[in-house]
Amino acid sequence: MFHAGLLKTNGTGGDAGVMDRTEWVERFRALAHTARDPRLQAYYAAGAPVGRMPLREVPLLALDVETTGLDLVQDEVVSIGIVPLSLDRVRASEARHWVLRPRAPLGHEAVTLHGITDQQVRRAPDLDQVLADVLAQMAGRVLVVHCREIERLFLDKAIRERTGEGIEFPVIDTMELEARVHRRPTPWWKRWLGAPAAPVSIRLSPSRTRYGLPRYRMHHALTDALATAELFQAQVAHRFGPETPLSALWH
Image (cartoon, rainbow, N blue to C red; front, side, top):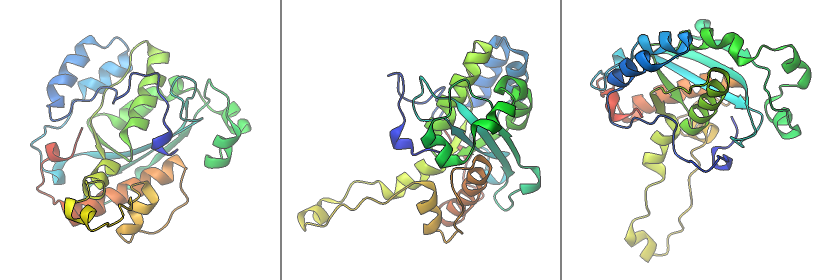
């Protein structure tokens, strides 16, 4: 994925469909009745886990999207990667990857970054053609992502343009979990002593390095989804635990 700090929106800001600290079960039940597209109806009808559920029981799906850029108004999703996981297992054999034909042109920076070419996207399906499959994989699961604004905002926009209605889904954001530790304010006494406030990167690759995880080539949707899945497992092992309630981590 692109660097989240460069994301440009239409000025609305925030997450699409954020339901912090609330129960998604009731929200999905309501959306199943109000959604008009049958694919979205089926997605919401599958339900969502309850916040009190321990992490060891939560059905999880790591997800990453690559885009043509970070301007939410002009840019589009160009690939999606997903990897099912639990706290002790990454089910790589069930991973999926879709290259998509965006309605926005591929810029040179995007091609250089994620390696998807104009020739590839010309042969690729539109998201609308694979949406039922993508939503079926997401159904009933909590998504694990690294920077929820990218996945939420771009997927919401892409689905809204094709169905006339957006999408809401619960996520665990591994970037936000790193921010809880590494973006805390510097204590006053350290500032008084003149300690430099050296920021710690919470991007995907540096975050993985802190847990001793191997280096991967970034900016491929499937590889980044796998990298996010492994990072989440490491975060839980080091800072949380199997009995930690889902409500402590999700958004």
